[in-house]
Image 1: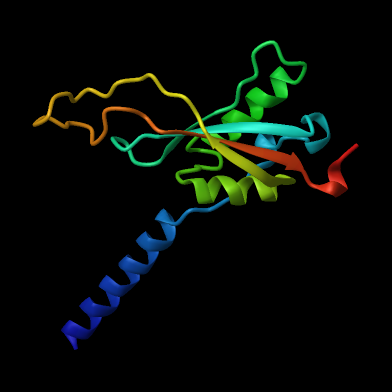
Image 2: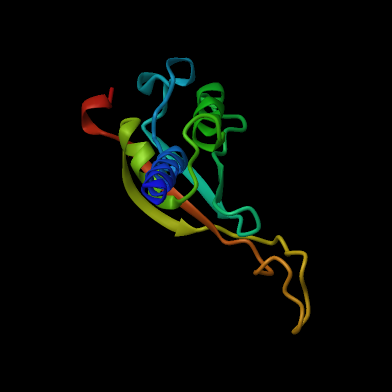
Length: 144
């Protein structure tokens, strides 16, 4: 009987912890981005960060007419307290939910060098960061 209770408690803890760590693509209202304010095309750069696990997300917004809303979108996608995008699959699904469709992807240039070097030393798993630029277009119903 005591073993049965312990088993039930362990099962409950396992289920709760699994559910709590699962990826959720929910956005609170205060983090919302108005699809009508965003440009028709958005290029999102994702960069592997093997040391921390997951990806770093950047959207080039310098000198853009859409600078402020692109900064907000970048923050929404990158911030762990908002959408918590950790993989490119999450990125594709989040952009779809935000009103965009995937168009194309291409490799980005990277000149960063990792902390490890030499034939026998590999501290962070890679000597160079790998960047992918994904092109998204507003879904037809949101195009102005």
